[in-house]
Amino acid sequence: MKMLSFFVLLNMLLIAATASFGQSYIVDMQRESARSDKLTGGRIEKQEFISGNDDIRITINIPSFQMTLWQNGKEIKAYPIGVGLLDYPVKIGILQASSVEWNPVWIPPSSDWIERSSTVKPGEIVLPTDPRNPLGKVKIPLGYGYLIHQAKGPADMGSLVSHGCIRVMQGDLYDLSEKIVAGLLLPVTPAQIAAAKRNKKTLIAQLDPIVPVEITYDTIVVESGRLNIYPDVYKHKRNTIENVRRELQTAGIDDSKLTDPQIRKMIAAAVGKRRFVVSAAAIERGTAMTVGKSVSVLGTTRAD
Image 1 (cartoon, rainbow, N blue to C red):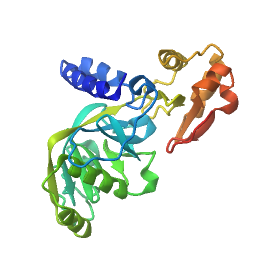
Image 2: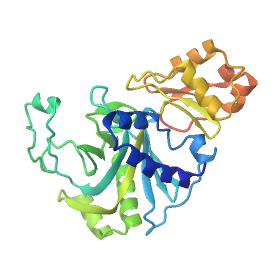
Image 3: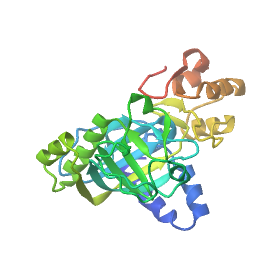
Image 4: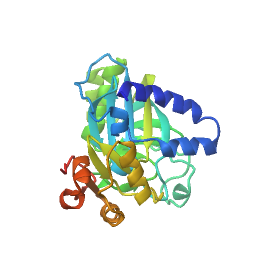
């Protein structure tokens, strides 16, 4: 299936997701990572970013701690991220990026963790000059109180760190924001953005058109001919022998030489900030446990 067709399907799923909460939850949890071979045909096409082309999408797969910017259905860039804590998970589904805001204000939500705070109150306007403001230099609102915003530092990447938001390193967030502005030809100049980086004056660019942001929870992904088993960070019990076999079989990979005990070891290796990766060829040769690797959840380590 081509990537362009995949994004058409996203719109169809968005309509289906409005039917009811229960139906929406089922649809959302069944979404596959946008990087899955079943959606890309086994090869993720890449291209250089094109200014003035507003066919822009953002996808996030929570267990892989990765956010991808797409244009015309092709990968522009992938960014490492931090995600919500176990008790404050990121919303799974299709959200909408409505603006980019440099030096953003923060309005604490009505939430139990805010209620327990001794420094801020729900609904309070916390200015960008206020040290209590945790958002950093940029935020991208996604609706329902969810945000993409600046990380505190490299330790946030590949970690459960936020109260339901996506955290991104400052340099990556600048890159993403400026590509969105250039792609949509928004009336914000490079000089204005440069000034916002230097000072703490709020600058807001409303997105027109809005940018779809699809958030998935796909712990078992065949990508570019390699099986990736990611940690089940929100404990949804997705990493099972049955689900690994289902992913391999629906991706057209012969799993007959892979035993259940071997799959258990693969799953056990995908924990914390580690994922298990092995090529489809090794699985079919029966050498998965010889060449498969437990590697950082971040990065592009290959295993043949």
